[in-house]
Length: 95
Image 1 (tube, rainbow, N blue to C red):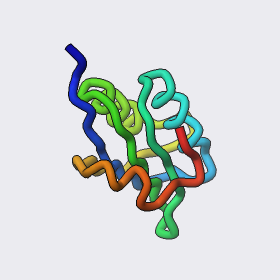
Image 2 (cartoon, one colour; image 1 turned 90 degrees about the vertical axis):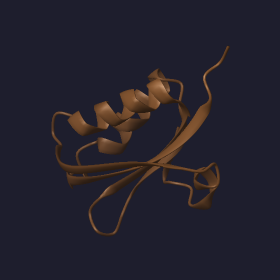
Image 3 (cartoon, one colour; image 1 turned 135 degrees about the vertical axis):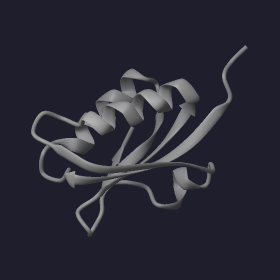
Image 4 (cartoon, rainbow, N blue to C red; image 1 turned 180 degrees about the horizontal axis):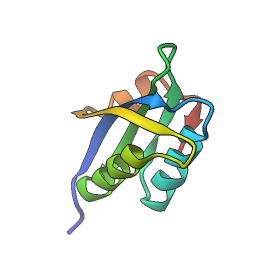
């Protein structure tokens, strides 16, 4: 039996732009077989929308909380959202 697909919106703040954060997230999402996108926000945050099984999404949240070596995560918010979020605002880096 396959696990139910869920969709998370993750907002990460700290030193997350200009440090390869979106590429790091895309690699992790690919490894976890998640679909979605990531984008830089005007306020300096990175927004991620990802879809897949709960366990894989939680693994992505955990990876985003660590971030790449050059990054620094000060705050991370993850909330469940709906499928519409996958297409409402495509990110500049899709996975």
